[in-house]
Image 1 (cartoon, rainbow, N blue to C red):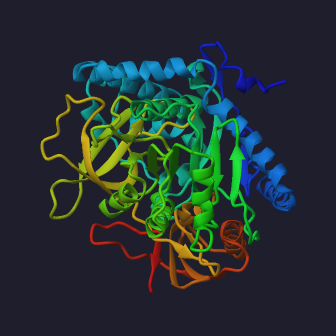
Image 2: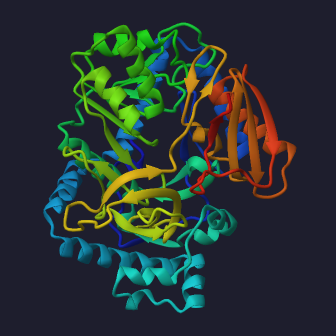
Image 3: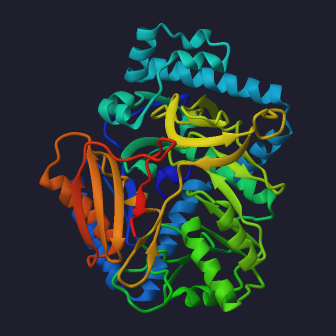
Length: 503
């Protein structure tokens, strides 16, 4: 019998939220288990046990476990009626700019009224600055409110949570993120925000000809092959999600041909993953003179897809890669369309592009307001990302303004003793809310130094948890040094890079 949340949301007008977070699925080493986050020490021990069991299970059992987790994700993201939601967001592409603005303004006012009535932090803030959501007539009035940061969310804790939410919010879950600063954040996410974000994502994919029945070679950050495994196969299958999962933690000079063999032999038409993982695959294909005749699409996300990476992928696979910009917080979204233009999805959220200190007047900071996060509203949230936009943006083009480039997601990789190169290491810090900033530096393969700016007093337990997160994702053989700092260096544009290779 399926849990009630898989069947549908309550038909009541609103629901009162428990003070305790509901069960949430944690995933480590390919294992899956529902645990209560409040019982963190117990949960960590249980997850460690499940991870060990997964790591020593036969490959066929690991395939089964990945498919079971894939089925859970499918039920959560794509419930009955999801196709109708996708068609609805596709229909919004035909709206005029005036229609998009009117819809966004109405949804924004509703969210602000909800936050002022049911969320202690926003109720007190609105009173302090004299802001009345009921009287709001234009999005520009948001500028009267201070920007929301991760530090504020961590400091305020349960004061950021709504006591009641409308039925449209759906089920509540717990999400984790860290971004490129290494600052961990755990927050309450609304089912409505998750499904709206995925509907917008599939609008973009469908525009390129990809459907939910298309099989995909996935290169991501989850540990789906045990780190101690030194021989193939480095692939696990999520049958319900139609994904062939390729281990990003084993991708290196000694394994890359096996990855290309898997994609070719299975005639997979689509590769999706982090650029830091897709590009080495493309370079290996170029070096070996290999072609993947069934391949039709390459899509990337989570990191910058720069000009060199684009050219490498196109030369190797004969396919123009397409990029997507998004965050776990579901604050701002942008998709690359068939015409090659990357545009904000401005029917998804309210996006402010604020001036940034510097000589280039086209550089802006992204601050966003979610229209669907009812359980914990994100209002004027500072993403930390910088973008270059058109000097004279054409706001009449759906779905929104055009991005020329994104600064803030350029990351290096960590090289293991095996030669494998692992990028996108923000996963290490997502649950570590006691870290304000972090940076991983590497001088030689098999060893790293993690420079940390803590949010408060640093304890041996904090360091043990950090080392455990590193060990789960990069293996026990990696040498790790933890260095305390008061501030970490920035780029010329004021950005903090999470991973730096110093040699």
